[in-house]
Image 1 (cartoon, rainbow, N blue to C red):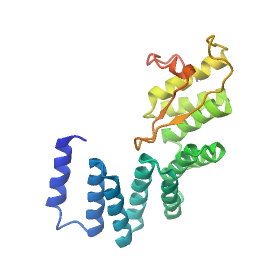
Image 2: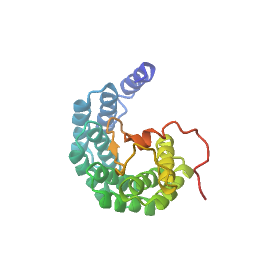
Image 3: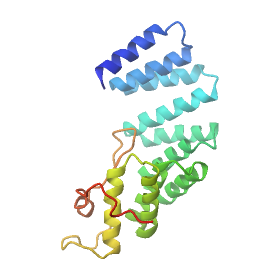
Length: 225
């Protein structure tokens, strides 16, 4: 974490100490602990905030932040509990469904993941990441390349943060559709490996097919209408 930003956060908490509610103070301290890498302390503060909170809006934010921490630290089942609580508080929030969809993806429950990401899109058609994950599943698991390409292009159009990975999947899918195979590829199906080391839940490609496409230039060769 940037030291200047860290110092600014500490000063802000101290300065506003007498003006913060106890819930806000717990949340601020939890965020600070998380930034410092003390996940267990952050969890303690968030749970303390939940015990004293009486606002659904605050609870939703706390549940989401707990989901992120549990995903980041490799405890998806704990994250799932808070995903479910997010949906219970606000069943029309696309973030809750996108978070749940990511959980199912981590657990290898691809049909449930697709269904949940589609629910997120139905609520907010402009959010890019559900399209990204649907496209990845369709290409890597379902081998539905045309529909996967369409979903990934929608993710690009909406400004996805995972542009590099989108390009890799697009090239892989177009290669499959065009029958382009390197001699040592064989007939193996492409697999997914998920990194939970960051709250953005970045998806990486590790197979030779995808890694061979990693050097693709940032252009529009694979965008289709």
